[in-house]
Image 1 (cartoon, rainbow, N blue to C red):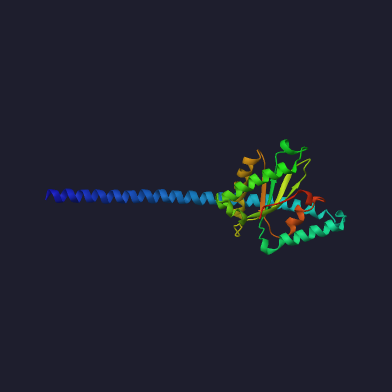
Image 2: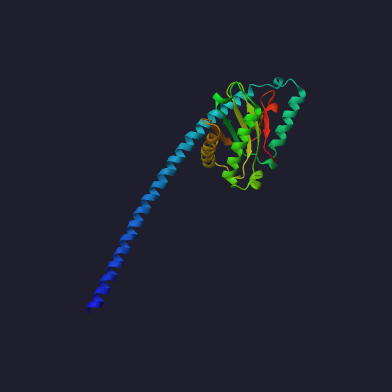
Length: 224
């Protein structure tokens, strides 16, 4: 009789502990779920502000481009080459879907421009970026590609890129997260370097990055 009572008591205690543990886990999970919702809401608000800033920047870029009349390209062959390149890179098969600007540290490069040095920095960044997206197997890196132009070599040096990214489902949250990743990777290559990332919607981005009269002299294309 006593044994049965002890067994029943132990079982009762186990049952109570189980209930308490479940209640504790449920309470913790509820708190965690609420925290996740708050974090996502905060992130969504940040992305909204982020996009508003980007829209202002895009408007500035568009205005800059529209100031360039066709007469700016006095050389007909240069104008034709520009148009052909834009048509080629804009083809759907090329799948360029990200517009990226990488700003370099002016202390290191402004007034002392060496194209090969900047190109090496870009290749160093690109390797890190491919590793982040594709792992360390270099044979996979050709799944992504870029076409880039170096600008303002003697003042505010930066690189404009059109990128073909493996992720074809580009949304606002992806852009926000990816820009943060790129910023970290780029700063490992260029200390204090900044970045600007946006979706590549149409050929206007190529119009913009090829706006310089001598863009072809500072154009860089990834290995394919």
